[in-house]
Image (tube, rainbow, N blue to C red; front, side):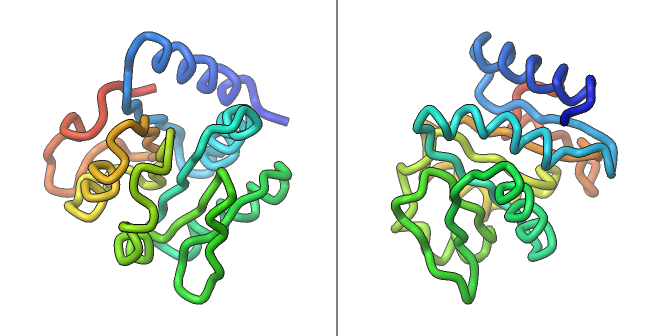
Length: 161
């Protein structure tokens, strides 16, 4: 069951997309349930046929997402070294490095790209994923909406929730 602030965050995301935002960032403090909130949001979308990519840069974040998808009974594929890909699945959890190596197979596939730890999502490898899926909306997840070099995130994201 979601907490009140998580339900509010999902409602604000829906409003942001409805108002034309393409790439909001969802900011929830560490331990506050960013992944669970995102999974609850995408569950409704995946049930309606949306093609969704959950992109992470480290194995532990991929494993965390996979567990959350399983608890929510979301059928998903995994794009990561040592895993079979499931091209027919609407939801994919991917290691950014594995996805980049296989990007040709995964271009123009997604309606929504969720970027875990999105303050890292401004690197050129992430941009390749965004450019390969130009019609996809983006949802950034982070507890720290700032980059280590002090630059902003406005190059890839257009709202903060």
